[in-house]
Length: 65
Image (cartoon, rainbow, N blue to C red; front, side):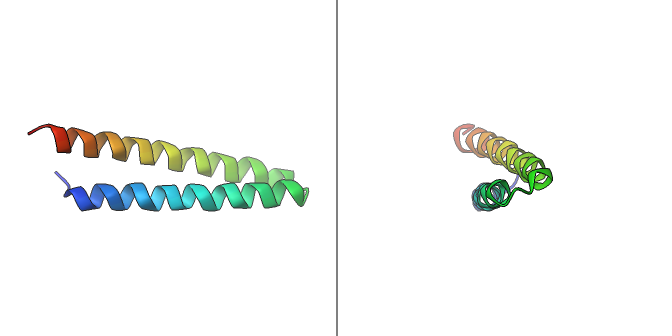
């Protein structure tokens, strides 16, 4: 099992990546770089899935005792 702080680090980093991808998606959309919008959106969705899975892992470890 990973320590609780590692779960929080994964959650924090994946949410930071999500915010950056959202920023880059908006910039690409307004800059009319539509091929990058799809790429950044997919990366943001992947980071959301990682954050959610890390949350589930943390919750399972926290409340299993």
